[in-house]
Length: 191
Image (cartoon, rainbow, N blue to C red):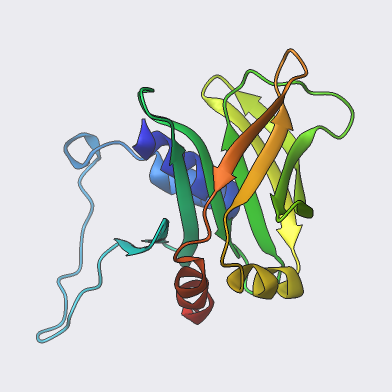
């Protein structure tokens, strides 16, 4: 299940080209392709990499067109099987704003401009608007300014994500910033 969440989050950030790349059939089902052997002495790079920074994981995937990276926090609830929410932050296109994508369970209220509010110390820091709902979850998206992203790198305390469930009750989920400064720096170093 976590792998499918990863593919969905990355495809939201990277666009349709990456989603098609991520959904390719396994190697034994793919038609044979002519591959050029690496040059002697050449070092090949891995297609997928991960690095953990506290409660955040930086994931990168090499596609045909580019290397796409994001930092992700997966929220799990004790006693529940699988993740309950996923937060992904990345810049799918170099000169565009940083994107915040939040996935939550599909049991929610979709009123006018419904979304997820991210707050720290009772101050709203971002508001991500729901863009789509699938059986596995609903996705809210927002653009983060460079100033907001820089401010987030300085947070030392935990934050919260809040949204309304289908019964219009507020759901509050914890958001940790432990490891976020290092993960954000690593993300910014990516080309």
